[in-house]
Length: 85
Image (cartoon, rainbow, N blue to C red; front, side, top):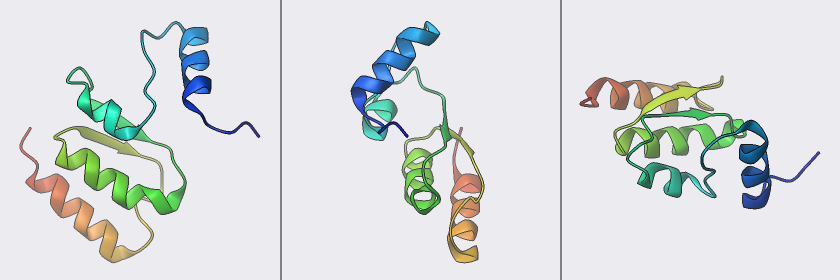
């Protein structure tokens, strides 16, 4: 399996004809053109990443599971409901 690197992201974006690639979630969220983020990272990262995305005021599409515990999932549901879009 290929290791995910910024260089691989740029290569894949170029192959797909995409205008840009990002090297981190923070860099992605710093781009005001980004309206939604699809979380496809390892399951244990979903909770923290979804919280960060919601805090940045972006829409989230998350692969399952949403989080590792029902408490974490409930927290994310509350944060999403409170988000002002």
